[in-house]
Length: 500
Image 1 (cartoon, rainbow, N blue to C red):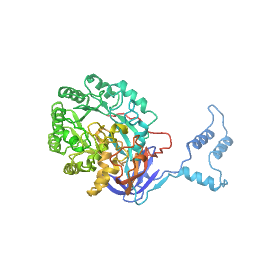
Image 2 (cartoon, helix red, strand yellow):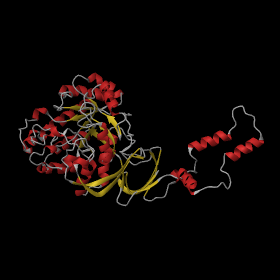
Image 3 (cartoon, rainbow, N blue to C red):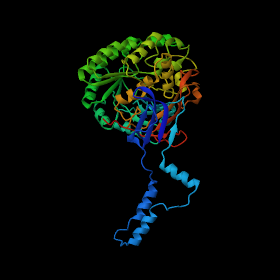
């Protein structure tokens, strides 16, 4: 297959390109024109494998069979098309289809992008499948241009803290995934000896909480346990990712419909103190660390200083922190509740600056759905509502919409949501349009707009803070390993494991 794109995101640039795909991989790219380079020159037409096999069988003697010049001549004649053999338009069309690759030419308003790699998704299956599930989550992912997700170890039951639980999750996912799915392991009190078996089983690293997670089956690590966990992950060469808020600085949220008490209960200092613990522990253990869903821009200078000192530390933020600010949250708007919280406009500006300056490494959705009733939309009580935002299908559109307001190029957004995420977890075979990479791709119409109607999303529960917002960026097609994802057909996604 050949995709001719007037615009494609390649090596951080938006350029015209022709991309050749064979057996699910990108085998050639011609940039700034449609001339095929010598390395990708068309090969002589070949018949279908069945035809080749038949001709080969006919043209070779049976083992031990005696032959004669007459037999050999007959065999030679049978194995070649007959001179002057009568044909028809149907036959010619069939022969042409076999010998020529499929060519797809994108429209002028479309951009070919690598499929996004979202490394922060809560699928919740098994155990809380009414919140989400592998079928609905991966359908939403494909519709949003995401071709690989990594599933968090909570809020499923059991949590992915043992190899037995990992196997249960794989069994639940098998045959349901429309995109590729990998898994994080969990680090909780008492499972230190489970980390190595999970690592050997192919998880992409380990998630921990430094305060109450909100679900009883995934307890937080205290400071001592966190040091023990990172000492072990450092020994394994594994990545330890942390929900970094300090419980000591988290206050009780007053009941009511106002967002302000909830925001005040989770101050920026809570993130900063927990991030300091992560930095100090990574320095002491020489471990690989990652901060999930940064909300507080106050922590950026400490992260920058740590990296300058050689600490292996990365940091992510999320579309909802880049799109909304606290002033937009209406009375009773519990669909906006997440932890850590959406903060003010100045903080949002600082997060964008952190991305542009390279202090924040990438953007992921932290897709954290729940049932509608758990969001307490009827009462609008922020103290009681579940804290989490479902954004998997809308992550690209929301981030791009906010980015274009700031004149940030699409290529940068794709870098943050595809390439950088893939690289951090070792999936260097995807998240980019490059020779040798998987042909996981999406066709995006970046200037086309749509109004978010939650009833038309593939998320299982129709609740979203983006409801009613007009977003830029419509994903028209998504390709997994070179084949278009068909949500009406059987799922083709694979369960993947860490390779290094």
